[in-house]
Image (tube, rainbow, N blue to C red; front, side, top):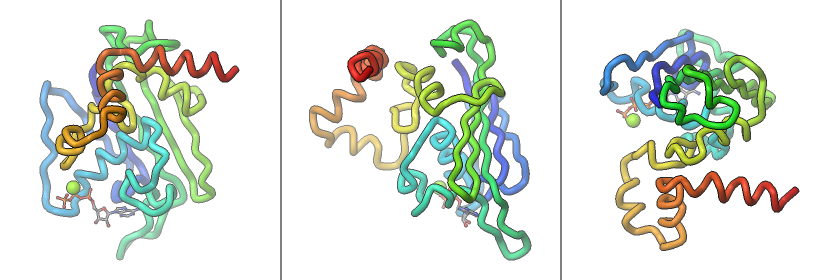
Length: 183
Ligand code: ATP
Ligand code: MG
């Protein structure tokens, strides 16, 4: 599983449609303070289903929509699409036999969120499900930020267990069990 491309439009400072390709084994995003580097990470977390505005460095969920600049008016919708290569079949469920998987999320000013899997409308859960056990999710360890390591070291045993279970691939079975028990 490899992230091939991020497409953003109307998301935070990325008002115009922008493609960020990841062609090499390692990509570094560099630029001056405030140019939008962290906004790209916020975009990844957002499309994976993040539902806390605080974790996206905002006050309200609609704060991710471009809210205008000196020379530009605000826009009505934010959209982010991630394109994954899935040749190793790491992405499971309905996407197991797809060599390329696209996930997309949009939100408008009325706080209406929409999710898409390979272009078809889906639920948030359909997206979070295919990433269970891959280490990639809105709050999983694939995104290591400033302060994450110390938080891990200082975390309570119960919190540490969540990371270990995700790394060991157990969390997806737990999630399925919770689902079954709730039916
Ligand atoms: P640093 O090097 O300081 O970490 P950075 O490159 O990570 O900087 P970001 O935090 O990604 O920068 O970007 C901050 C910029 O994004 C600010 O200029 C802020 O005004 C802009 N921004 C954030 N949300 C929005 C929004 N909804 N609409 C327009 N601009 C936004
Ligand atoms: Mg930053």
